Length: 113
Image 1 (cartoon, rainbow, N blue to C red):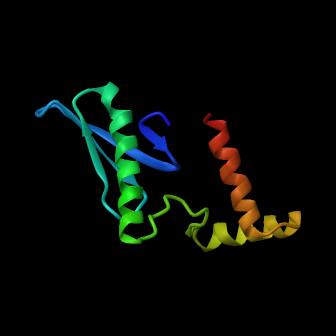
Image 2 (image 1 turned 180 degrees about the vertical axis):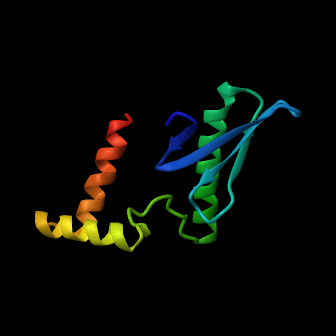
Image 3 (image 1 turned 30 degrees about the horizontal axis):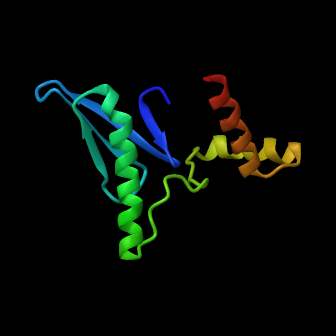
């Protein structure tokens, strides 16, 4: 990931505050707020990983299931005409609409790698 961090399937975003000369970030795509900060770019990864580990330990200590970052399921709003066209293509290929969308997204994201 070009502008983020990944650890134990959690994704961390990072920003720099030029006034305070500090990096700060948070774990993305979870409902809980988990943040971290570092004085240098080299400290970012260890601070992020420690934040993830602390979050998982806290969840275990209080008996709460930690939020998962991605479930593999999301809603897509295509608009009626694109939805119709996609449904026709998927039917013509003998696959589900979910399979068609998954294939399209996979193709799109692998082109950027």
